[in-house]
Length: 334
Image (cartoon, rainbow, N blue to C red):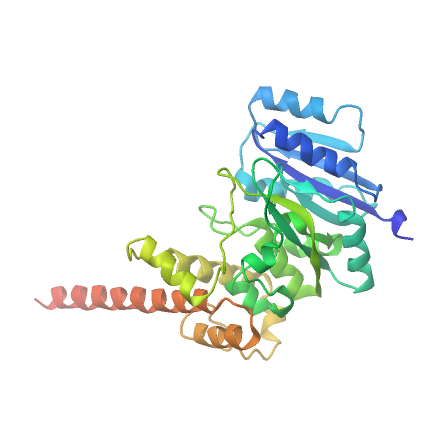
């Protein structure tokens, strides 16, 4: 029954390392599940790379290249790719791919079986980390980063994303809520965070505690990995490495992202009796972030360090705002 279901793969490219790209393409070709089509969404690569991409996928009609004259950056390039994917009414699920990873042969078959058996709207897997020479750095990204994805909830996902885009497979039914991607002036959040958040809101996310992707770690990655990301000590070390510099950007990103999510689902959220940051419908990640800190600590989600950092930034920014307003009012009365 599963073989009748058609999967669309959205593979985003931009001036790819051709050795890595060819290995990714071969790993897609070698999938045991054969009923797929792969949309290569090129984000205005130089002509030499466009020609090379076409040569790599030549003679396999399951690969469809889409070249563009305008560069949207990876976030909106994936959005563009999703629009191509859903033009085929036979597509029932969508997978995302990066240009430099390597998929295990059963990635699609295992993911699709899990998606259907658990009646989930999205499934994702663990990943092995490899270096530029395909050597394994770590056998489990989830363990390395202390991720506990089975503990996720919508509010905890707003705190920290634990779903990596190149490992996901999700139902096309999500697209109507996923698109359009929320706007942002600069790239602060990524496509997989938004898609995971929508999936958590609309249904069940299933987790595969098995690496199905060799996730390449190198200097050109848009997103890297950090050991024990989200824990208290890791946040402190990061702050020390920045010489205690405070910009407030992290708080502003979480605040804006949360507000955009709330705006997308305002009617649904207004009908829910939230006990977390939605109590007053004011998703500014203010003092209620401490509830998320406690929830993360209690559940083992391992993101309480992030919650505390955001709360501290909120307090500091509010203090600066109060001082500014106080100074401004005093000047008026002088």
